[in-house]
Each structure stands twice: as structure tokens, then as C-alpha cells.
Length: 140
Image 1 (tube, rainbow, N blue to C red):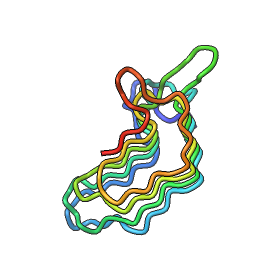
Image 2: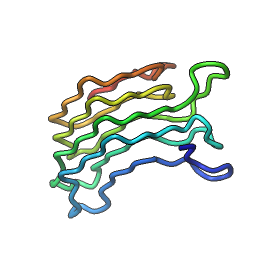
Image 3: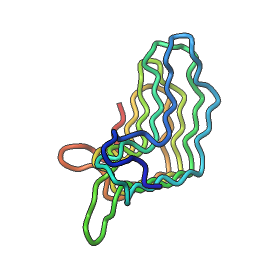
């Protein structure tokens, strides 16, 4: 709830990140989390969930991102946009990721953005995400 602090940088609420080519990111489950930054002191408050494999590490996947609720700002009254991306998964060796049954509301960039291979993206709810030339859902 309300991640970030005034005067500080934004953050990523859940960050799975490989730092060395020998690191592993396997059998990871990110399930049933509530990320709500509507009342954050900073803008942008960062990202909801990021999973990245940018070190060339070969031991990546399977990864499951399921049943999460991500709220990036208010969609009524004074409309806010405090979260950049809802779910962002990327990297040269990223693979075998399933993203399902997540509810993502009011992001400034993509609700879901994935880059890699062997992805399953299904049954997600994206509400008031993207805009300004940024797609709601980016698959590459």
C-alpha cells in the first residue's frame, strides 16, 4: 500500500531480478498480492511487478504471476496516474512465464508488458491502462 516516499525515488513493489549470469530464476510463484499505490506520496510510484533476466543467465522459468490486484491510481474524482507498469517481464533469456487472472487498474504505461518466449497470458483484467501511444498490452 502507498509505496514510495516523498523526496525518494520510485520503486518496484515486487522485483525478481537476476544480477549475474550464474543466477537462477526458476519455479517462482507471485500470487494473490495487493499492490495499491493510489495514495502514494510520489509520482511515479514505480512499477507493480517486474521480472527480469538481462544477464544472459540460462536458468530462467517457469514463473507464474497469478491472481494479483494492482491499482496504480484513482479512476474517479481526481484522476491519478502513479504506477508506470502493472506487470513487466523482460530479458534476453526470459521464457516460460504464465501471467493469468490478474486485475490491473490505472497504469501510465502498459498494464502488462512481456518480452521473451514461451509466454501464456490469459484471463487478465486491464482497466484504464496505457495511453499516450503506450499500448495496454505489449507482447514482443
